[in-house]
Image (cartoon, rainbow, N blue to C red; front, top):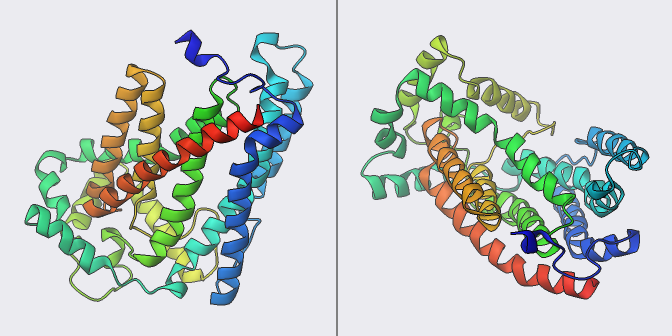
Length: 335
């Protein structure tokens, strides 16, 4: 394990010029995505803003400056200065990247109407003989279990930021770092944006509130969740109300946008699982269990159909495999 954690390529802990070389492909993909989404939004009349996550520039700048200023007071083996330099190019572009993503996702209905829910729900029924949530309900339909799933599902953002944020600063395994970050960015761009446009759907919990054509197959489960929420807080209700209000306002805000297929929660959880297995059995098992929780929670809590997760996991796996050779070539070339 110690050998695995050592730098994989000579010169893999760079100065600023080396950091730019190591991050060139990743940052280039992110900037290309920002430019393309801007053009698509402009042509489709979708409100677009690069400042939705502008506060992150202040946060990253402040933390980076503090870390760099304190680097001589901290243990030299932490290599704070090198880590800050390595992460800086990615963190400078990330707020613009995610602002572009949220802008386009918030205007998804202007690019493609929500027409896929009935078909995707039908795929679920073809597999299970009924809606997927009904299969899980006998085991999960108890307020304490639903509450626990809600808490764990809501922790997805923190898990993603911890794992992929940590990888931004990682010096030990440059090829794995770059593979994971490239796969993550590709998932947001290809699955979360263009996949969401092509298969525009809102998910079970929004079919009724948005008055989409066809039967609301989630109405009974929504009634159960309201009952559970009266006993223990089910955080999905507040988040769903926030997303509906943002959609009604017709402008992007922090974290806005409604889209179900493919599931970004499941795609990113799948990547976290893959990263975990690269760091050892315990991390791999933990990542696998959390991936399972996200899959089950996405169905039980009404965010997604079962097939949303199948497409997301398959897409994330393919993008992970595609990112590997690109990462290894980039690291070798940078050295």
